[in-house]
Image (cartoon, rainbow, N blue to C red; front, side, top):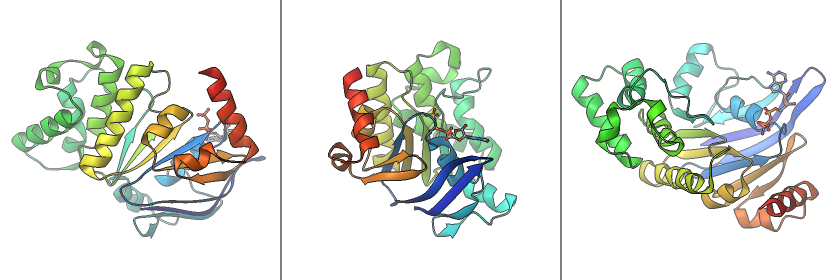
Length: 245
Ligand SMILES: Nc1ncnc2c1ncn2[C@@H]1O[C@H](COP(=O)(O)OP(=O)(O)OP(=O)(O)O)[C@@H](O)[C@H]1O
């Protein structure tokens, strides 16, 4: 579904990505792990064409998006759902209107069809119809995340990108966000890319973990492979994490 080939990106003197190769098969979940400033967000922005690489390819569903025009990219972005660290809901809109928003923007569905679709997605994320009329400020952090994911998947995307979805959450809420990511994968068959520095969560949800360090992916494979990695950068990261917990 996603194939990144020899991607390089420099900002002035700062060589952020220096030859990234990454394949994410359709329907699987890839977690991109790495320390602060290692280039995770920059890599994710290339996947939706928000940044253009200096060199390299970003193939999404068989098409290289690097040479695409703005219109072409808009089309490709329709097949992506995004979940941000802060749920990024519209505070002045109800839960229902937040989830309905992409349908109103990008489809010509009638009110009944919109209602049905919104209900289905809220239900999938474990949210009862009673919350539809509430505003984001009245929801817990975990519920806001659920609404954010319901909105991200309302247009039936092929890929969902999660930008540090568990940062700053307590352990129980983190577990429920992990569950939600697994539900979206299982029930909707989406391909997921999760940017994270939360190892516990990465091990919970990943089919594949790619570890980014100094501009390249130094380890890439199932979670067990990361645990047994002999790469110094991975070992330091794991030790720091397990020392902390
Ligand atoms: N638009 C930009 N212009 C210049 N430099 C940038 C830009 N975007 C990112 N960078 C630089 O690229 C490097 C990687 O940043 P990035 O945000 O991808 O890190 P990250 O791994 O996501 O970190 P964190 O976990 O802290 O969010 C940093 O040195 C950052 O300053």
